[in-house]
Length: 151
Image (tube, rainbow, N blue to C red; front, side, top):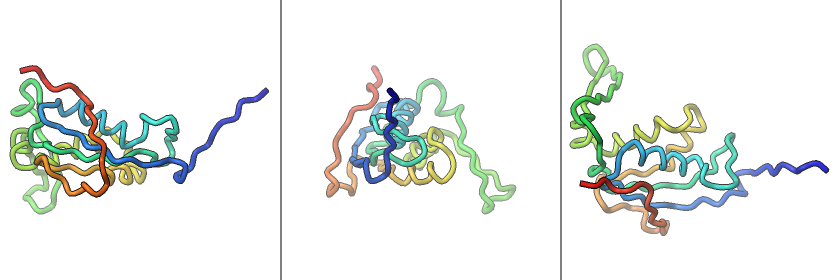
């Protein structure tokens, strides 16, 4: 007796909306768990060759936590042609103060597959610096991913 392998298609997978509060959560752990939801690895219908993940809304990303001396020691590099020499360097402290949404988006993008499939997955991520978001009509479900840090 042979076992039958179930092959899922995009129309077989229902997409949900989730809201994640990033206040006082470690950036790396939060990003890895968001990436699992975006890829759909938390579902039994996970198929690696198509996008079966859910939509994720991240709020309060300006209050995300970085451990150790990452605020001063970690740098974000970007090769832009608008600057002389093309290289732009920002510390994690500058990113957290001025560009918190970009910092969270970069952390999640680093954990997604690269290429057309990863670009399709990252479009399902919506990041907001404050506690308000514009996706109320989707009726998102609030989930708690990682534990808050103990102060």
